[in-house]
Amino acid sequence: MKKDRLQKSLEIFGIQAVMDAVREGREFDKIFMEKGVNTGLAMELRALLKVHNILFKAVPVEKLNRLTHKEHEGVFAFVSPVNFYTLGDVLMKTFEEGKSPIFLMLDRITDVRNFGAITRTAEACGVNAIILPKIGGAQLNSDAMKTSTGALMHIPICREQNLHHSLKYLKKSGLKVVACTEKTDTELYDVPFVDPVVIVMGSEEDGISDDILELADVKTRIPMFGKTESLNVSVASAVILYEAIRQRQLEA
Image (cartoon, rainbow, N blue to C red; front, side, top):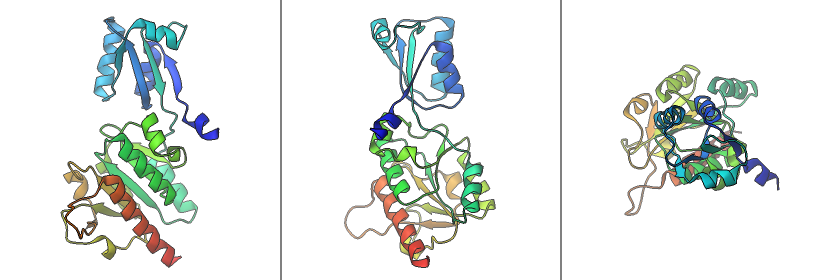
């Protein structure tokens, strides 16, 4: 019962209310807009959604009327219940608690189910925060929540405007950057993870961005012994995170 309550999305309606939520950086599960509405505000909302890479579905007004009996102005949205954290605050809290930080940065990972699975593993491993780009990452919607089995409610999520700048900040704060990439001969089991670290994972299609990769202190790959050339990114994340936890348990 508690999990169902946590996963329930916030309902908002009205053009200005939805626009405010977009500008505040809220994540949307679904947005419905009335078909054929071309008022100035409606067009402004569509343009704003396009800038933020947020999808909406055009529906008949009857559907909107079934969702609410109040004045909806042709738009109704379900907002994700996930709260976001400031990277600096999470880092400071982790150090204050006497922990050796282990952060996970996801670059260009847009598949919602992959993201949910990664979040589930990261929370199980005690990762202190997951770092995402504000634009160009997976949507934190009901699919992500379902795949994570509620883990999204229990691990800090930091959405950053610029991952390159965020990584430079973490490096200056004493964290080692370990990037998982095929562009190296260094295998995973030769890399120490005991000290403060941020692990960077990229998309299966494009890998890690070049500007992010150049900041890596260590580049590592998962050894492959069969004919398969690569792993799903959620599986690869699990392999790396549990190797990090294994090493830390041995040092404890």
